[in-house]
Image 1: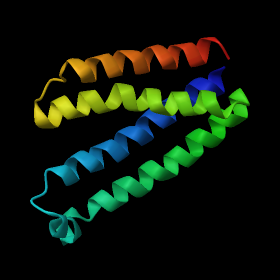
Image 2: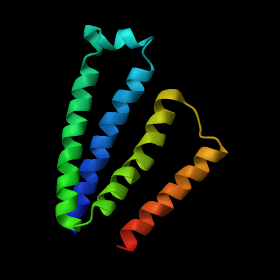
Image 3: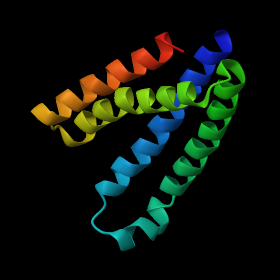
Length: 116
């Protein structure tokens, strides 16, 4: 169980880095500005985030022996991190449909972990 918790932590950090890079890129004035020198750190963030995703998936599968549990943990990380970052960067609250989606996603994550 400790390895699974560590894998979950790594997946949350990894998803957070990737989402953070996506949010920074969304605030850029255009696609061409993504490749300007001052914005190339975004590629480093994505590289580190994806590397951590590989580690998290590997550790999670080794601990759970079930890829669906690891997938649910990854999606759960997104469910936790992305709304926080979206509000932080864009100061927008989710609409009713998005709230229902987040709640159902959280229920699915909990169900996947409990009934494995």
